[in-house]
Each structure stands twice: as C-alpha cells, then as structure tokens.
Length: 150
Image (tube, rainbow, N blue to C red; front, side, top):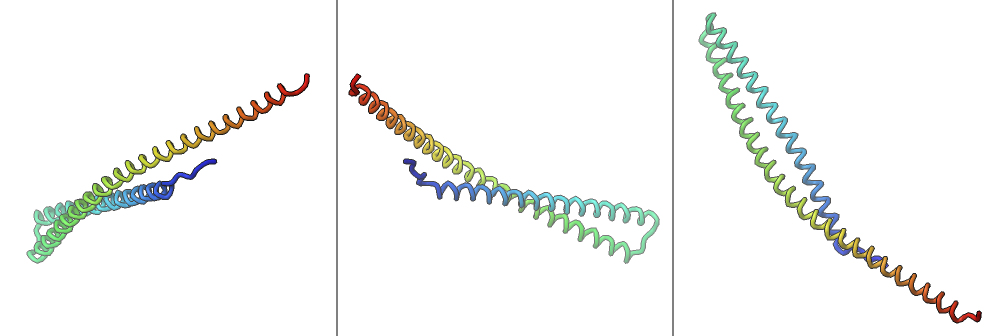
C-alpha cells in the first residue's frame, strides 16, 4: 500500500512561493525597462532642447525666453535625476527579489529531492511486496503440484 508524502503541502507551498517570486521578478524587470526608457526619453528631450537653445543663442534670443528655456532645461535635469533614483530603487528591489528567488529555488529543489526519494522508496517497497506475493503464489502452486497424485 502506497503511503502519502507527508511533506506534500510544504512542497506545494514551496512551488507556489517560487512561482510568485518569478512573477514578481518579471514585473520588476518590466519596471526597470520602463524606467530606463523614460530616462532615455528625458535625455533625448534634454539634448534636443539644449541644441535648440544653443542654436537660438547663436542667432539671438530674448532674455525672458533664455531664462524660461534655462528653467525648462533645469527641470529636465531634475527629472533625469529622479529617473536615476527610480532606476536605482528598482535595481535594489531586483537584487532583493533575486536573492529571495535563489533561496526559494534552493528550498524547492531540496523538497523535490525529498519527494523523489520518497517516491523511489515507495516504488521499491511496492516492488518488494509484489515479489513477495508472487513468490508466495509460486510456492503455493509448487506445493499443490507436489502433493497431487501422479
């Protein structure tokens, strides 16, 4: 008779935990990609604005317009700095989730090994029991044939 793996519930929890961490890792990677894309757009916009301001300064620009554009460029630089902070935060969270995922994967693999060892042991015991039953049947047949009158 096959026994049930006593740690089956824990095994399922470990698998779910690992899957949840993989999903969280994917979401963080998506956030990182989006943050880098936003930073790149800000850099491109800032470079374009700077180039336009430099061009306008060569041809002549009003002081009010110059101050407005400089303030706009400063705002873009600040937004770029915020984007860098956001990327740093996402990278920090990414490392934390990677560490947790590594540990969860290690624990899940241990549980998988225990479960596989348990199943192999149960299969071995079942095979031995079947062999014992077959040996008993063969012995009964032998005894019956031997006791039969010829």
